[in-house]
Structures are given as structure tokens and as C-alpha cells.
Image (cartoon, rainbow, N blue to C red; front, side, top):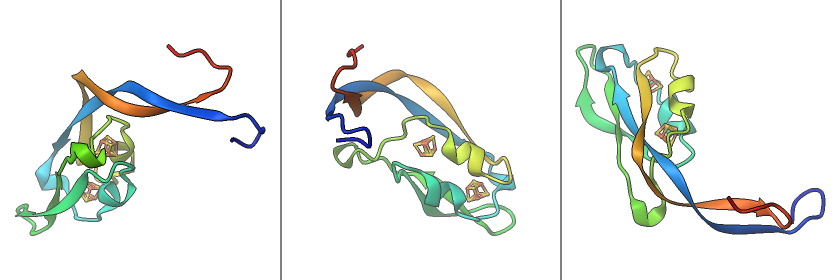
Amino acid sequence: MNASGKTLLTQRVKVSRGEIHIIEERCKQCRLCIELCPREVLQESEKVNEKGYHLPEVVEEPEKEKICVSCGICEVACPEYAIWVREKKEMHQGRGIYGKNSSNR
Ligand code: SF4
Ligand code: SF4
């Protein structure tokens, strides 16, 4: 039930996936992209850039729904403009929330 008292229903919907790109020399290991990713698909890797900073990497776990959904939060959050996401053409099953009287597209 939401704040207005309406019942919310969940169902599986198609959502787009993202392909993450990192401009390695710009990263300063601030971890903002890792901490803010709502799908928890980023983690710190062992790989370091030329300045010695550990780079983020993508680790997707579909069974735990840890899948990049191309939301762009990491891209917006990065203070160094070191990470960006490109929407993939393929789609995967995700979970959507609808109001009881909304139409399912
Ligand atoms: S685009 Fe969104 S889901 Fe994908 S890695 Fe960035 S923050 Fe996470
Ligand atoms: S937010 Fe940018 S600078 Fe910070 S760890 Fe992620 S890619 Fe590197």
C-alpha cells in the first residue's frame, strides 16, 4: 500500500540493461559509483590505473537481480567523469510496481 492508501501490485516487466565503460586514467577510487549503484553491480577490483587507484568493475549476478539496468546513477555521481553507461539493446526481466488502477503497458 502506498502513501495515498492505494494497493500496489508488482509484476515482472522488461527493463533495459546497461554496458559500463570506465576511462581508467580518470578514476580516483572515490567509490561513489560503487556505493550509489542501486543494483550493487559494481565492486572495487584488484586492477589499478597508472596512478595506483583501484578501478571499479562490474560483477553481475542475475539470480540476485544484480544486473545493470542503465539507470545512469554511477555516471552522474562520478566526480571525475570516469564512468559512463550505454544502454544495451537486449532486455531482461525486472520487477515493476503498478498502482491498482494503472494500465499495464
Ligand atoms: S547504470 Fe545504474 S545499475 Fe548500472 S552500474 Fe551504474 S548505477 Fe549501477
Ligand atoms: S565514481 Fe568515478 S572516480 Fe569514483 S571510483 Fe567510480 S569511476 Fe572512479
